Length: 174
Image (tube, rainbow, N blue to C red; front, side, top):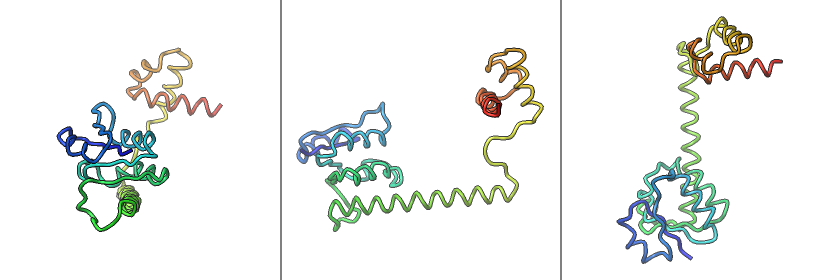
């Protein structure tokens, strides 16, 4: 059975001539999640897309989908394919996977280098640290005065998440 997947209802009639079933993107679920569900639910069928461009995703965003396709050995094809048209569908998918893995590694490396450069230049990365007096005040207000986490956060002028973080650190230290 051939399962078609489209993001644009205008392609439905074109896809119907290639597929037994045509599924349309739902607007309530992220597209990446829909693609993973598609492979999980139809791994034994051929999945057909109109074109790679119609997915409107970057190659690295396709990595979880491509990984599932390769793991499940799912057949994936495209009605129109201008990129690497001489490759068979399996080789094309494996090539996209390799490019996505490489792109992810490059992005990770660039991010690490940017963070290192920022730190060398004195820029603080991540959440700002809070003064120890505020940490003591958090413990006092919560443990001794019995204030709620929300009240503690408001009184100390920090986020609720920060109050949780320091209370959890105190709990783990005990």
